[in-house]
Length: 251
Length: 94
Image 1 (cartoon, each protein chain N blue to C red):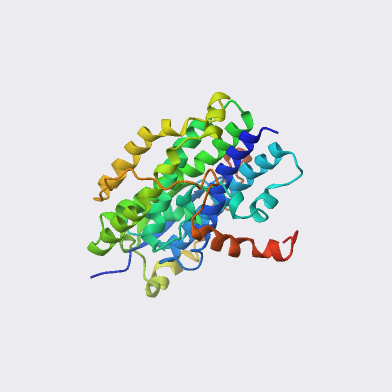
Image 2 (image 1 turned 90 degrees about the vertical axis):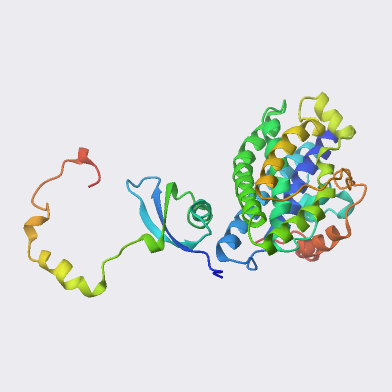
């Protein structure tokens, strides 16, 4: 088994799994019906991408596990998602700010992965990138709409950006897994995405009349699995309880 | 202050359809978001290839009370319907 590729695929799959579950928490609770449906669609797209990434991860691992087992029967210390995506939803504005900060990175990363030397990775990236392109368009529009909205919505969006900003840096930190992916031509160096990312979010945040905090401090540990925030365990409790209580239960 | 988003009427041209059809209505702050919302609400199952949105206040409608004067006179004029011709298959949908 290629242990580095397995780890890398877990990172991709866990990002979409955890964010997909977080976004699905809005189902039935969004401020208006149209946003409720749009958020549920986004969540489903992310879960769909998860099936592909974790499905491939399971195949690479070669131990007879499948995507469902990886999603539902791993514990918190085996998760490899960015800390950003496990943070609680907060208000609608913070959810959409988190979505935008992730979508912008996701669409750039998937664009690079489409040229991966591993055709299986390239194929999943090509499929996912169409969804990601729509997601970032939608979340960017909403960030602008709320940022450049009323006094209250502007204040909430600025607060959301300040709360989330320390979790952005982790997306661009590389480690030995990334180095192995770069050497094999499978994935880009995370740091190489930063300039394009800064340009994209800079443009949107400016249009939204918001200000990016002047700090480069970055919480880390999520994608390496060194440590997660206290929030992930609570989320996994509600996400996994059914498969934990009734292993193998099916629809 | 007005808190409600305006209502938009949504028209979608399906994969095999030839013209846009009214599919329903939804709320959105502006035309662009109305198109995005329509994409999420009405094209989830691959129903469409094109979306039109029109703010509902801009739709002028005939009044139900005018029904008689508007439509009944045509009931007795069967010759207005092209039912006496065979339409060649090559013409396709009419």
